[in-house]
Length: 359
Image (cartoon, rainbow, N blue to C red; front, side):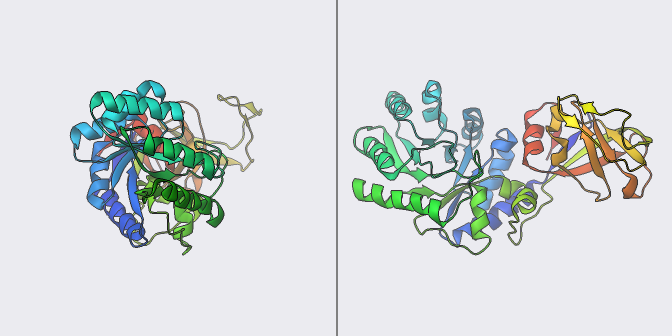
């Protein structure tokens, strides 16, 4: 299989990691490099570490296992709260994990005891997004005291929060202030400083990049897409960090049909995915089809044609239709079209066997 192909520029990712770590480090913040989008790609993990990331983080234990097997010295972080059924694997392959459930913490403690290890945990607080986390400083402090005083095989490394994942709640001085308040309360209760107060993910850069400081207690962020694929956070959130390279990934697909066609069909209706679709009548347009579809990249509207004259008309499971009328160049079957990507198609490319990855 020659196409579709995703070209990965590891040098650009490595330099982006260095730029991001310098940017955050100058503000007293360590960076965990998140690799979940890449299906645990160890070359990208190495680029993150070379750039200065403190941990390699992912939501899947199988990713962290690959990292530990190939880069034994890497500190690994599980950023999806663990399933109770995978507690032993979590302790075996993750140096630390994010947690919110007492039952899971007790099972992690038991697993760590059996393996003769100490597992580090970060307790999550829900400060508004309504995904994982304990609500309220008092409840979080009670859980922290349990870990600190009763679960001998766990170490309370810190606390954290998530934003803009389920409810679209963005980090601000108020909800980050709740996390900072909890950190102070817990430190008083346990009589020591927490190692980590993790103030979210790439989304928290919406504050830092606009010159808005975080509470002084926040000393850690979990960042993936903004390092590896910064075009997404620039276009979606307006975040620009000087020195970041947006040409880290290029997806190339082959043209399998080209020709002039009407811009609208004779009848409207639902498409293959059951969605109602309609198109503006702009006359006869030059359209091409590339051998690329939802099975490869999810939503084709999340692709960014490198040629600004190309527009994405739609896609089915195996085909993506492009309007190239305004591109001003003739194309033939067998030619190729290249794209940058938002986060979702990048995730799909690494997860499917139908896209070739080249580094």
